[in-house]
Image 1 (cartoon, rainbow, N blue to C red):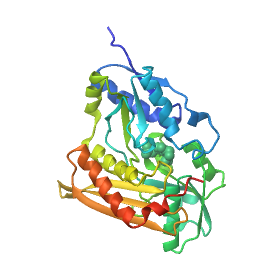
Image 2: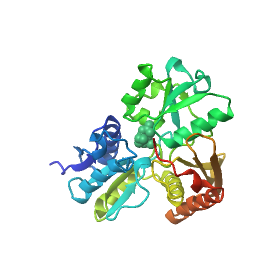
Image 3: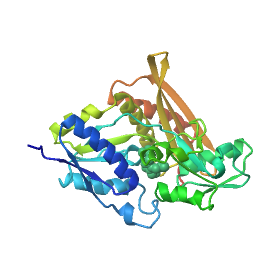
Image 4: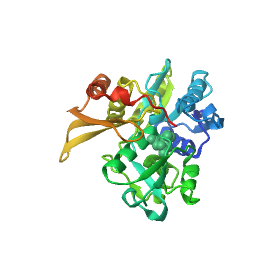
Length: 319
Ligand SMILES: NCc1[nH]cc(CCC(=O)O)c1CC(=O)O
């Protein structure tokens, strides 16, 4: 006698399939039920228009959410950094599993690191957040670089380096890990150089709020520290009134004294894409014990960043 399979709605991209596959195994373990992948095609997958013109990465999420609400699938997995900060009516993020490496990385030709790229190096990235921080780093370190807007999946982006069209591309370590290409990284960027996107490296497992049994089962996959961290990061993003294509970086981590976790630190950055101006601040507080406390940490840092002129730096959109 086999139990009825749970249906996991997923995009068809290699990255989405990889992360859905991993979550499917974990969900199968905690529920004792088989999990079946259901491919959902989104506008973002088929459109050739630039993401900024069609409303950012939220388009990838929308089709999955519609499938959930129509009851066509039981749950979905999102990259948290692509998930709009506003919670969706009728849906709940039932689990945020342990986060992977949140850092951005460089894949460059000739195994080069960011600091030994040739003068005038062309670095591909479509993210204003990466452009702003890379250009700011170059300015303060006497480097000459050119950030080149690109989009496409991981294979396409690395392809620009292999073809010689670009000297380097900047990507998320987590994405490369999930598609099995982490070996191609030539430089893991310190978060002091490039602060990742809010939620980067973390996944959200979402289902309908009325599915109490599934909500409870999925909760077993939740990592409270990761959830608190990404809640604070996303609260900062929301309080800055910035979207997923805004030049905003945020990362919360735990400060420990030996084995004893003392506090949570939240770092944030906003900048102009040319890197001429960055507002970069951090705040530290008790490890949030509640959702509300995590939200408060993000709001607190946003208030400080806004007081330093953060709002004036966010007018730009992805080019
Ligand atoms: N921008 C697209 C995107 N959305 C999620 C990831 C993978 C990393 C993650 O889950 O945070 C990526 C690729 C990248 O930024 O290189």
